[in-house]
Image 1 (cartoon, rainbow, N blue to C red):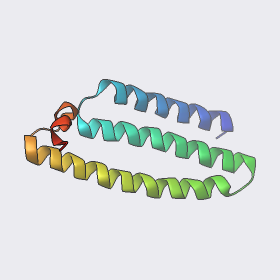
Image 2: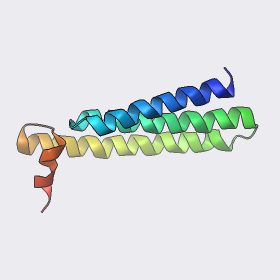
Image 3: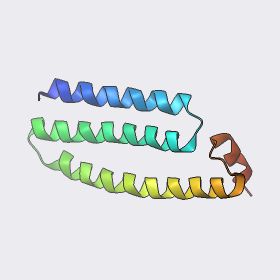
Length: 99
């Protein structure tokens, strides 16, 4: 796989994530779209590290994976709180969670 193919794959994933982020109002769909965008950035880090020669991009990619796992945990906790209070996970209902 060439660098151009990796960058094209990453750009396609990022565009799909942006499209999902703009069009979805369901909280789980938004979380999945954000994950697609994060995975696209991770693919970029690994591709430039692989074809650039240094291990820095791969180390940063591992760190980014750990951060996205933490983001998913916090996001799913918010989704559970939203579902417990409203019996629905539409993002528009999240405004009522503010105190």
